[in-house]
Each structure stands twice: as C-alpha cells, then as structure tokens.
Amino acid sequence: MKTSIVTLILLGVASAAPADLIQLTSGKLVSGRVLSYANDLFVVQPTNTAPVQVPANSISTIDFPSGAVLATVEVGGEKPAAGKIWLYARGALNFDSASGETARIPLAKISRVSFSADPLPDRPAPLPRPKINPPPSPYPYAFTKVEIISHGESVDIQKHCIPGKITIVDFYADWCGPCRQAGPILEECVNKDPDLVLRKIDIVKWSSPVSQQFGLHGIPYIQVYDGRGNKVGDMTGFNKAILESYLSRARQ
Image 1 (spheres, one colour):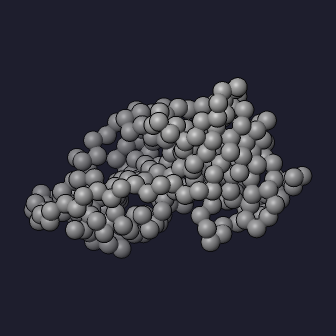
Image 2 (cartoon, one colour):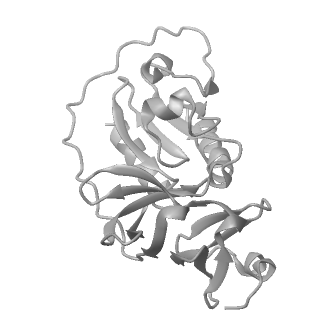
Image 3 (tube, helix red, strand yellow):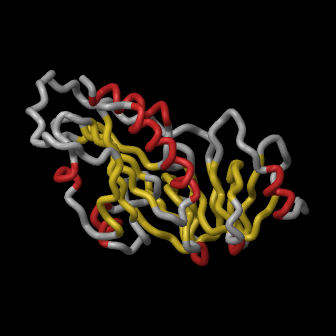
C-alpha cells in the first residue's frame, strides 16, 4: 500500500474490461478500479496490480464506464445506505439512493464508501414504435453535421434536431477527461454516416443553467433522437455498444 501516485499513473493502463477513469489534480488520467474510501483515502486497484491508497485531495474527478456504479455509503454514524454513485467531483459524491433520492454528499461528511463490482441492473427496453416515414426535410440547403449549440445556456434540443436525420447530443466539458476521449469517437461516427448529425452542449460547470435544466449527474451524457425528434435513449458515460443499440432503434 506504499506505492506512489507516480507509480500508480505508470501502471494505470487500460484493460480489456471497462475501467473507472480517475482524473488527478495534476491533470493525469488513470484507469483502474476504485474499491473503497475512508479517512480521506481512496483505495484504487490499477490493472493487474495490487491496490494502492490515493489521497482524496489528489483526485479531481472519478467517472465510471457504465455511467454509475453500485456502492454503499456511510455518512457519519448513520446506517450505511445502498445506491448508485454517478460521479466524484469537487470533493463530493453524486449519489442516488435505492429509493431514488439524489444527493451530492461532500467527502467531509462521509465515513466510508464501498464500491461494488456488480453490474448495474439493465433498464427495461422501451416498447417498439410503429414505423412512420419521417416528414420531408425543411432543410433544402446543406446543414452542419457537427455543431455546438450551447455553452452553458439552457437549450431546446428538439429545435436543433434535423428532421429525417438521427441526432446524437453530447453533453461535455473541456475539463472532463472521459469527454475528451468520447468526443472524437462520436464525431468520427457522425462524419462517416450520412444519416447522423451531432449536437454538442458544453455544460461549462455543474452549476450552469443547462446542467440544472437536465439535472446532470455525470458527463459525458449522451442522448439519441430519431428522425422524428423523439428521444430513443440516453446514457451517462460512453459505451459504444449501447450507442449502436440506440442508433439501430432510431433507424426503425
């Protein structure tokens, strides 16, 4: 448990399994698995190495590959609460309890956290939509394939959907490491497919109007709309397989 943070960075390489993404205050991005938190220390296990202790004040953000992770949180002397953690940022955990209540809990109030390796339960699939031909496009001119439609301001996304095209919406921030990884993948996907457009929303900060409008818990947060402007699905974090399933559903 005496491995230095520098060694942790060197060992924190991506594995075949999705890894948690840990952004250090130095700007370095580490991949591994967060196991627990107590006494101002996170216990992190980089790929194929023993767990190491990392001071909480040396970590800027923690994002999870499936958008959230199951965890048990103990606040003060209260009974441990089970739920989902969406994000660690700015010295606090974004936590959804099993009853559905959402809270941002500062580490200063937390005694202990145990992060689970169990997968999140699958969301029920939406009912199939009837096949309807999309309306004729009102855009006889060339439209922009990739466009930033907000820099923190509230936004009406459906006004930016292109009729007859599948619209991917990417909520991101320049300081978000996972966003910088997902952005180029989304742009390449859109530029290769004539049926897709990408609308990007820079949340700027967690307190911005657009963050409050959508109640964001983590980024990248991605939405997919079909050619009629109906939302097909969304996800917190980037998962290519889930994105492909949403795109396939939007084409129906």
